[in-house]
Image (cartoon, rainbow, N blue to C red; front, side, top):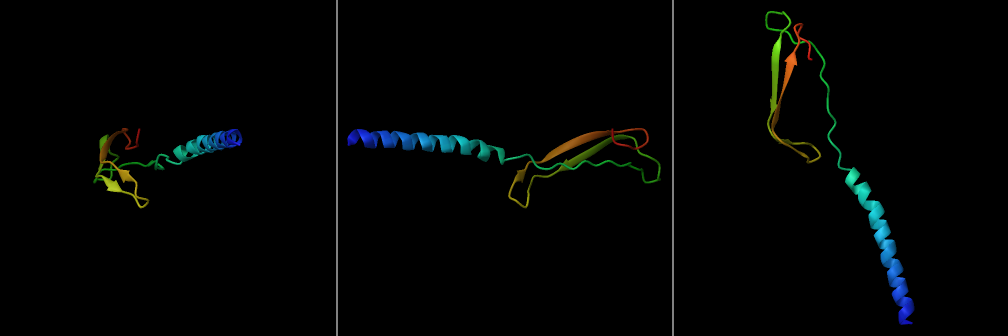
Length: 86
Protein backbone atom coordinates (compact mmCIF):
# COMPACT_ATOMS: atom_id res chain seq x y z
CA UNK A 1 0.00 0.00 0.00
CA UNK A 2 2.80 2.40 0.89
CA UNK A 3 4.59 1.60 -2.36
CA UNK A 4 1.53 2.53 -4.48
CA UNK A 5 1.05 5.89 -2.78
CA UNK A 6 4.75 6.69 -3.18
CA UNK A 7 4.49 5.98 -6.91
CA UNK A 8 1.41 8.21 -7.18
CA UNK A 9 3.20 10.98 -5.31
CA UNK A 10 6.16 10.76 -7.69
CA UNK A 11 3.84 10.89 -10.71
CA UNK A 12 2.09 13.91 -9.21
CA UNK A 13 5.40 15.71 -8.65
CA UNK A 14 6.49 14.89 -12.20
CA UNK A 15 3.21 16.21 -13.62
CA UNK A 16 3.49 19.37 -11.50
CA UNK A 17 7.08 19.91 -12.65
CA UNK A 18 6.08 19.54 -16.31
CA UNK A 19 3.19 21.99 -15.94
CA UNK A 20 5.44 24.56 -14.27
CA UNK A 21 8.22 24.03 -16.79
CA UNK A 22 5.81 24.67 -19.65
CA UNK A 23 4.12 27.65 -17.96
CA UNK A 24 7.26 29.59 -16.96
CA UNK A 25 8.40 30.45 -20.52
CA UNK A 26 4.92 31.87 -21.18
CA UNK A 27 5.18 34.10 -18.12
CA UNK A 28 8.64 35.31 -19.14
CA UNK A 29 7.58 36.19 -22.68
CA UNK A 30 4.73 38.43 -21.52
CA UNK A 31 7.18 41.11 -20.34
CA UNK A 32 7.92 42.85 -23.60
CA UNK A 33 9.61 46.07 -24.55
CA UNK A 34 7.31 49.03 -25.06
CA UNK A 35 6.10 49.99 -28.51
CA UNK A 36 8.38 52.60 -30.06
CA UNK A 37 7.32 55.46 -32.30
CA UNK A 38 9.35 56.54 -35.32
CA UNK A 39 9.33 60.23 -36.15
CA UNK A 40 10.17 61.15 -39.73
CA UNK A 41 9.88 64.79 -40.76
CA UNK A 42 11.83 67.90 -41.69
CA UNK A 43 12.94 70.34 -38.99
CA UNK A 44 12.76 74.03 -39.87
CA UNK A 45 14.39 77.03 -38.22
CA UNK A 46 12.29 79.99 -37.07
CA UNK A 47 13.00 81.82 -40.34
CA UNK A 48 11.55 78.92 -42.40
CA UNK A 49 14.84 77.52 -43.69
CA UNK A 50 15.70 73.83 -43.11
CA UNK A 51 17.70 73.29 -39.92
CA UNK A 52 20.95 71.37 -39.61
CA UNK A 53 23.06 70.29 -36.66
CA UNK A 54 22.15 68.07 -33.71
CA UNK A 55 18.69 67.60 -32.23
CA UNK A 56 18.73 66.90 -28.46
CA UNK A 57 15.76 65.07 -26.97
CA UNK A 58 15.38 64.46 -23.22
CA UNK A 59 12.60 63.19 -20.95
CA UNK A 60 12.05 62.91 -17.19
CA UNK A 61 11.32 59.63 -15.44
CA UNK A 62 7.62 58.73 -15.50
CA UNK A 63 5.10 55.94 -14.96
CA UNK A 64 2.90 54.76 -17.82
CA UNK A 65 -0.83 54.08 -17.65
CA UNK A 66 -0.19 50.35 -17.12
CA UNK A 67 2.18 51.10 -14.18
CA UNK A 68 5.47 50.54 -16.05
CA UNK A 69 8.28 52.79 -14.88
CA UNK A 70 10.30 54.61 -17.54
CA UNK A 71 13.70 55.93 -16.53
CA UNK A 72 14.82 59.44 -17.41
CA UNK A 73 16.95 59.62 -20.50
CA UNK A 74 18.17 61.56 -23.49
CA UNK A 75 18.89 61.00 -27.16
CA UNK A 76 20.71 63.03 -29.77
CA UNK A 77 20.03 62.83 -33.50
CA UNK A 78 22.04 64.45 -36.27
CA UNK A 79 20.02 66.49 -38.75
CA UNK A 80 20.94 66.44 -42.39
CA UNK A 81 21.65 69.57 -44.42
CA UNK A 82 18.03 69.82 -45.55
CA UNK A 83 16.60 69.41 -42.00
CA UNK A 84 15.83 65.72 -42.35
CA UNK A 85 16.61 63.20 -39.64
CA UNK A 86 19.54 60.96 -40.48
